Amino acid sequence: MGNLQKNLEIVKTISNTIKKLKNITWILTGSTALALQGVNVPVNDIDIITDEISGRNLDESLSDYCIQKYIYSSNDKYQSYYGIYRINDVKVEIMGNFQYKLKDGNWSKENHLHEVKFYNYNNTLIPILSLEQELEEYYNTGKTNTAEKIEGFLKNNK
Image (cartoon, rainbow, N blue to C red; front, side, top):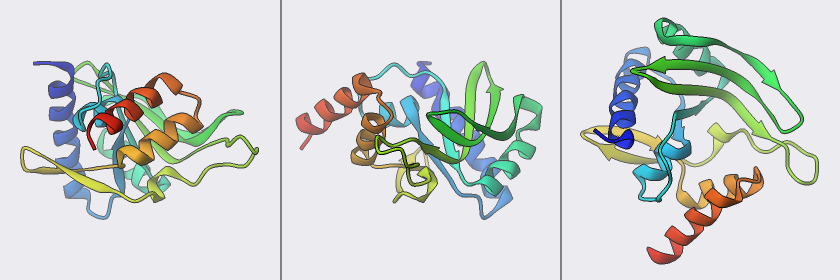
């Protein structure tokens, strides 16, 4: 099983946990979400963006897998609630109220507030950001190599 397939099975398990919790806001992002939509990127960890409270509920539900407790963290580039989990040897990062510093010095819109679309993976609806939104996020965070891959994919698939 490839990394994408393995990660998506873990995302499916997390999604089933979320369904039991009810009223949890979450979005799959990062390399797993990009590869799921067809962008040729190495699939690494699983990144989930959410709001503060949903993140706390997820942290509690995933406590058996916790590597780093979900707490508020900030530096000169990013600020969010942040927790790390390891499920079946895959790193899962949960970021609540995630924001990054814009070039003008202001903080970005919290990522979980962006418009969401859904990808159907084996009868599990996975919330994701559009590739256009991901492109903007990657450029804004200075991750130009990945942004260029997204941009190339979008140009070749219109």
